[in-house]
Length: 299
Image 1 (cartoon, rainbow, N blue to C red):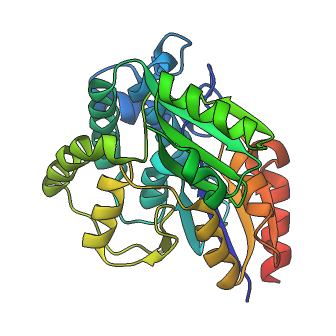
Image 2: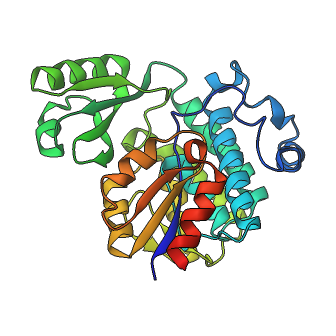
């Protein structure tokens, strides 16, 4: 039987007001507010979303709320996978991590990343070159994401990224775009904050997941709680291998990949690889279509 995969986006598609229309939103936001000791309803204001911590918390809350809404209508995932911060709502939805622990850990994660690089660093997408073509052009940048065969992301300082982008365009890249991410994620620059987050995980209980946890960093399914801890704690410093993860999903007979709001970036990336199934952005396609496609898949 074909399987269902829930995917959870990383930073980039966040937007003001994204928490205001959540299903059962008041309950989720009240719970998050109690955990944080602040009003979570203010995390998605334009001013708040200038900060990594608020962006990551908003993506966590939104991902869990929408996936829980589908689960309440008997649409449960066989697999979950998240890109970067998306790994945390994925772990919650899989049953490996409690929502309350995830909120505390993601708040810390955002703070650690922002404190390490408060300004002058970030991510830039390079479209149209393969990994082997881009790597000699990196200079002082790091390869951060392998999203597709010719959709890569580099991390580094603004100056280093601009120089790499210029070299990439000269070498035939179609596009170089600075992303809405204010820290140099998924590279060695974040190794120290990752180690600090790993220490914080020692106070948290991570359980064996109910759904298969497919790592967006390694492209492998992880069942062991201690390995999920390592994956979550260190994913900020590890290269994202989304293309490899979706290839693994395809090999495991995933017939439907549903991306949790906000956005549709992962749907586009997944559709290129999932030759045996369909990919749907829940925000664009809607809940009714997701339920219909899942019902048809499992009939």
